[in-house]
Image 1 (cartoon, rainbow, N blue to C red):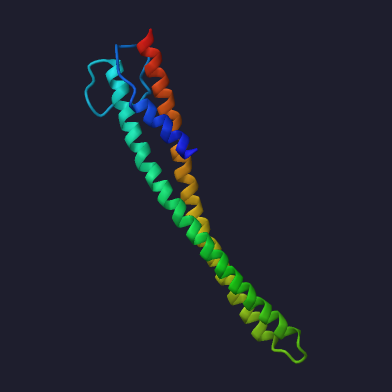
Image 2: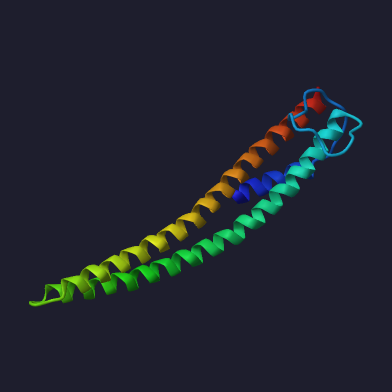
Length: 153
């Protein structure tokens, strides 16, 4: 979705701005004074393209970080599961220390919850940025479509 949106943004931002048209506004006020609706639309398109490029860069970096964190998370979970198995094996022996089992299991489960919470936060931030990118792409496409419609009428 991100590469398709980048291609759409690049194509639309490189389109020429010819003629004035009506109905090209997106509801957002441009940062600069515009001489006509088409110029405003092109200014908005250019700004949206810049925002989109920055967001895509952030998403790509976060994606790599999330994948790396997920791999580390899995490695950590495997180690914690091995510890759990040791506690289970120890508690299965006659005369085992149930208190040590309970304490060990409690610590392992708390660590797992912390690790899961940490990666969940990263994932939530990443999902939010993907949603922002999708909304920005849709806004860009709508503005580009309005700009094209406005210049042809």
